[in-house]
Length: 409
Image (tube, rainbow, N blue to C red; front, top):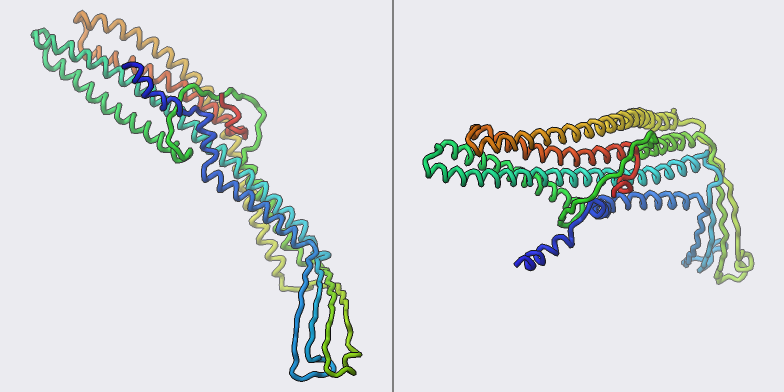
């Protein structure tokens, strides 16, 4: 029978995921793919703009048929042409546009990294909160088992007339309260599993054993979301400069080669027709006055840059404060573990003493129940404190601008 039971459980253990696997799955979901497409889109846009500054070559042909032939209009004609056109100088807009698009690419890449880290942090929180809830569930189940055993014991005393019904009712009430708490814990567990399913796109069965590596260093790096804001700011500044480039001269080159095939009915006119023609044009244009439209457009975009710069400085400072708070929270989490260990030792000692007295009728039922509850709560608190420490380590890594998935063991 035991062998069949183990075989039944085997598939669940086979597909259980540790923290590394959960993060790997979550970093391949639709949100990540969407952000990856944005990166590719930014790169293609840059390549497209590059192409607009390269020489453009066009070929074509026309055929015409005239009802009345003249010296300039043959009865029928075919004209083929090849044209090459390019901008020689655009006031510096080209360089600024390139800088803007390069910054856009870096911005989208950093947004992708930021999303990966944000999702990883969510998964880490879910993972260790799940394990913490499991420990709370286990402690509550053990408490219920002990209460049920005491209820059976008291029922025998009640039948023998050596105890009162209110003592049994107190136990039953405690069991009912503990069962409600157990169902609430189970709901929280299921909520976490569903949230992980949203991120991983599949059913989740969590395995224990994963931890976060220690990372306590002053080597602070800007978080990816702050870097993304920095590149967005650079892109807008480059756009502002590009807007002002139309105040400068524009120079372009256009060269077209024509090949003619003229079909005159009048051979006299045929002899004067040309077979080919090449026309070279160099155009120069300089906008001298536009009622300040160009300057105002440049100032408008520059104001956007200043707005982003202010936001960048705010977020950068906030990120630095967040890191300090994360380090402080980590130190407090360590103290909580020390305190929880001491609390468990005290709760165990108190319970052992009271249980002996209770069995011998030296303390009341209420005293025993309180000691029992404190013991199992202390067990749960200690495990939760240890899992909370892992989350605090992850927060330090996140706010230090490092990739969380590189620090899981």
